[in-house]
Image (cartoon, rainbow, N blue to C red):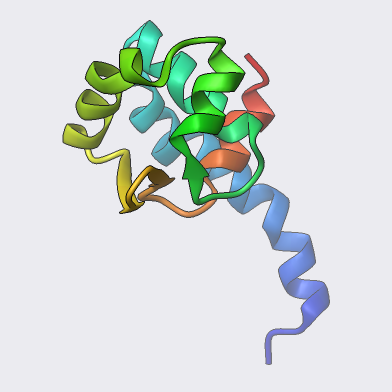
Length: 102
C-alpha cells in the first residue's frame, strides 16, 4: 500500500525529474518573447489567465501580444479556455516557471 508519507518522500524527486526533462524540453522550445509571455502568465498564479492580466504584467498593450500568443498556442504550450483567457496545456508548468524565477 502506498501511503501519504511515501508520496511526500517521492514528490521532490519526481518534480526534479520533470524539471530536468519534460518541463525543460518544453521551455527550451520557446523564444525569448514567448518566455516573457509564459512567465507573465505564471506570475499571475494558477490559471486560467486573463489576457488583460498578462498584458498588465508585461506592461504592454493586449493587442501587441497576439503574435506571441498565437506562436505559443501553435507550439502546444497554451490554449484558450474561454474568450480572453488562456491556460497551460501541461499541469504544473506554471509552478515550474515560478521555480525557474527568471
